[in-house]
Amino acid sequence: MNPTVRVYLFFYIATIFYVLAQYYHLSLDTWSMTRAFTIAIPLVIIEYYFSLTANHEANLILKMNPVQILLITMTFYFLNTWLFNYFILKNDIVVWREIMSFILIIGAFLLSTNIKPKIK
Image (cartoon, rainbow, N blue to C red; front, top):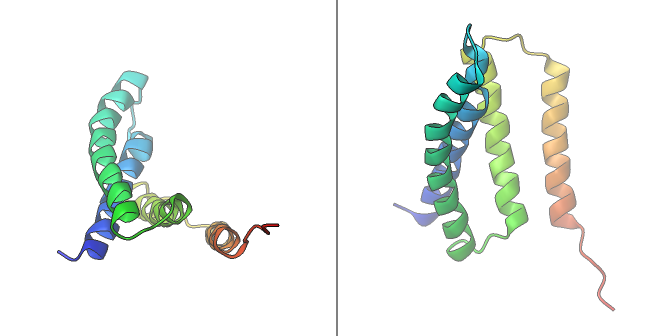
């Protein structure tokens, strides 16, 4: 498999498991900390495997820096959280909030990639 495709695929898979670990308990009618913990821990372990592998390969093979890695991960979090919210939780979509979230992600990307410190 192409290393670039593998890295992005692993980032995406990691964010799927993170979103499930973070928000799945919201779909439960009867919620307890123990139940949420029992659901989240295996999902976080799987997420951690994919995330660490993707982070390592992105840095080593693709020469990505931590900011670039974070922005890719945040974008996938945004997408997967939106999909989870719409398809699993079946919450209404508030368009202006979705657009504002996306604008903030784009703004973070632009700020982190275009501002260069002046070296004297």
